[in-house]
Length: 232
Image 1 (cartoon, helix red, strand yellow):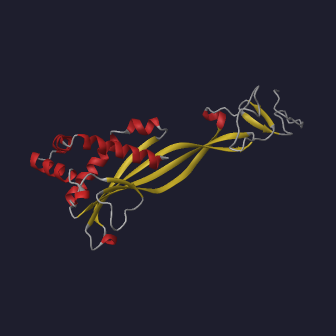
Image 2: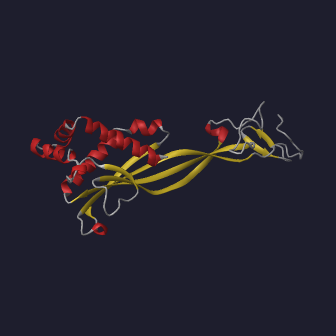
Image 3: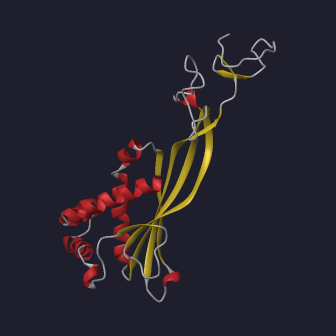
């Protein structure tokens, strides 16, 4: 699941900065041109402890919209949409469908019934909402921290089977639904593709030059019953 993959990437990235908060200062000075004093202020906010009543701290990573009481600051992962773009017959996508000597035995669905593997390409669209109380500048800083973590984790996306990973962002905005609390939000969107496997009942037929010929139909037009699979 891409939501879970993003959650893991963000948690690991935040934990890396928490292990040595000086990295926060180095990142914003070197990569974004902040002064040493500005970067130190970001680090101070990052190191606050909400459990001690301090407003701030590292962003919490959550699934879905934050509640009225938070937790803030946060990176909230939301699914905008997912859609099936196309599908491939299993063997054409490199998956064993049971053709050949092991016909009807190589591929089974979850009930153990002979099936043909169908691989579906799914396009995911995910939004990550960066939500911070009261201080719009920190929302901006945490947005750039988020984007760097995501860009630095491209190999992790690819290792989990996600391809064509793209990022886009939207500007800072106040969130009226959280009034009277002053919550600021900035959004980064992720678009990616991945394959999902499903099974379809396996019909009886023959495979000729990569094409599946149904029961009772042959490539020469002569009707005959083929049960089970036979080479022509």
